[in-house]
Length: 295
Image 1 (cartoon, rainbow, N blue to C red):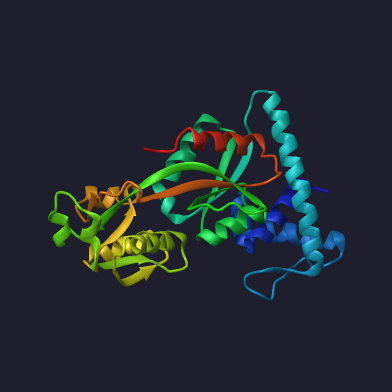
Image 2: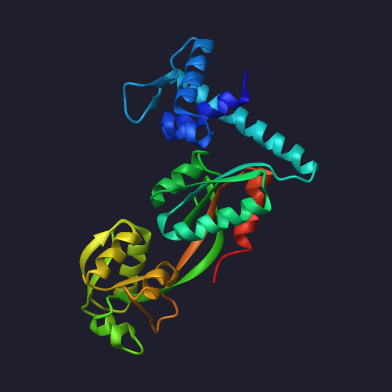
């Protein structure tokens, strides 16, 4: 039994895609398909239903996946621990992150970590909040980066950082000219906000409700990038984490003002499976994140 082949199958099954599984392992899609066919011939059953998109595990494939995931995980931990005895950090860490953590920021963190540890690799995937929880719970990711994190029976939360929220608007909006912005200035304004089911939207709704203020949500999106684009064309105002709009403010496309409300913050945390020992590489990356929460 080839552990490398089992890993390719695990990654194909977890991503529901031969091409994505191949990319994770640095091989061609054709090579990944051949590995999959070899495994199916070896065991004498079909493991993946190829008639559906995305790909789905067959009943036999589910059993094979559960076993192969455990075997690969144990093998990776064993190899990493042996290499750590030699003073080397090797292997990979899988990280699932919400989009608003910042593509540039996480790319820089990943590159710096890999530069310090040339034999280590960080596999980073961006997804919606609920998918981050699912990825970590289902062992598709070792760590998850999420805002307003919530612990569950399967997951524990490690606090990472607190992000200050700011008022963001077009440079020609009347609030852009104010030197200081009070919470009362936000009353009855037209807002570009998040979709109602997101934690950050619920937190913002609670913030206004507790202060007896009304706001009119004219547009709602499920990610910060779309909100910023709406603000750039003058669709309203919004409350966003300050670090997520620095580029647009520097370019003069948006204006950001701090608000006299110290409690207006966004907590960001790291979620990890309970009762699971991280590989040395994953543990080192977790420590690396904790030492660099950002400013």
